[in-house]
Image (cartoon, rainbow, N blue to C red):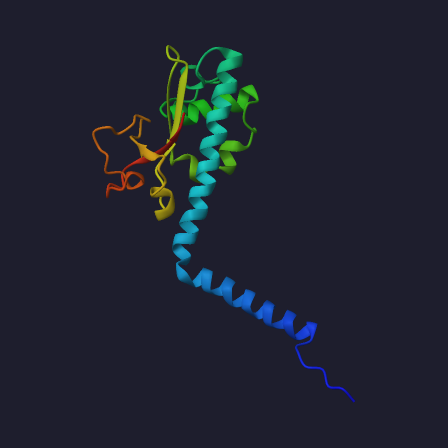
Length: 169
């Protein structure tokens, strides 16, 4: 009788599954709070992108920025916040889902918008919370979406300033 040496396929699959489980556990244990911040930043970045494209679509149809239009019906609560005013106007125009503000209410407080009809521009920004998003080279703007030429200390520029914003224009 000949003896065969080696591992069976089942033994190899068990070892690979155990190594995979250990790897997943290790990744989660490295810094779970940073992973949560990273997930939140990813969601906020997606909202920034949705809002910016909705503003562009709104402007192309209405020929005005959504925060410059009075709300129908008027609401004193929303009229004081241009972001909320713009969101409601874009929802009413069909550029955003009708429940967008309700679903994204916690993240919308982190989003800032500015724009100019004269220059046909819109800038939507947020301040990242996770280290990796703060180190992003595009995190180099003020809250108003202006490049911080006077402050090259944003983390994305190799500096130490954490008050820089990530913007899409």
